[in-house]
Amino acid sequence: MRTRRLLAPALLGLGAALLPAPAADAGEGFVGRCPLFPVAGAGADAATGGVTAWQRRRNDNSFVQGLRLWVRGLDDAEGATLWVTPPGRLDAEEVGDLAWAENGSAYFEVLVDSRYDNGAEIPGGAESMYRLQGAVFEVRVPGASLEDLPALRGRLRDFRWRDFVLRPGSPGTRGRTAPMVRPPPPVVPPDDLARGKVRVWRRPRPGGARMGISVFARGLTGEETYEVWIEDPAGDLQEVGSLESTGDGLGFWSLDTDAGDTLPPEAGEDDVRGLARRRIELRRSGFTDPSLVALFPRVR
Image (cartoon, rainbow, N blue to C red; front, side):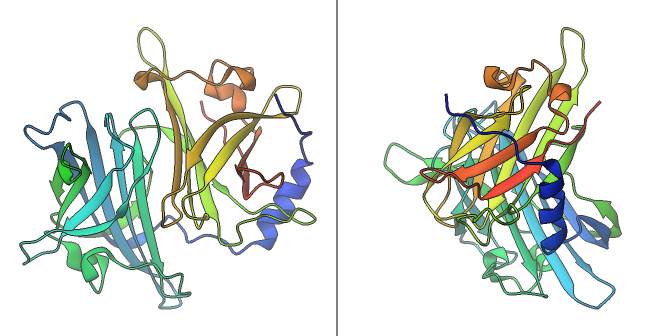
């Protein structure tokens, strides 16, 4: 097993301070949510998911808008795609590939910020996320005929003007999220535009807590393999998993004990609470320097 000594946490903090701050994930604005339900006859009866679309104006009159979609329990998460039927139209349009994990979880996110142009577009050609009110969202998976067949579907209904906080994952899940940032010099990350987040969650219940970890990144090199590394109790980094980035540079890795996953033995912990303040890295395969780094947030 390959190992590498932990860089000083102070350097990680310095790198975060030098980087542009990510768009705030809380504020006052329009937000709309909808659940995704299994499509009859699609064979995805155990799957579930949801969509959140939002937009808000900052104090400097700039706008930030986002769309997040999550899926859990999908047998054919690999190759899953997102389709949208905009309001007033009859035909669905393909938006892009979902980033997926081997345990049947998948994730999609797009962020459109008027402060900078990162090439992101609002699905369905809408001029704002608010215009997606009434749109139908579908998650499709490859069928036997090699055509994408609907597995989950939901309609985004009323938007509301409110103070909101965006939390990844299914409603009711309790946890903490930390940004993943580019490492500071002298490290030279191979992906200049990469940004991401790591989420740790835990839900006590009779018979043992349900818990998990998820990593989501965008701005990666398309269609590449990335390795997930976690610091062990001795301060060494251990490779614990991998993900495949989509053609649009999205990447997703997930552990969920309800899906039969266990915490990596290399991490030396059987509870996510023991990972607090440990380092996690995302590295493109074949590179020693990471693309993104973070410290695990503390959960109770």
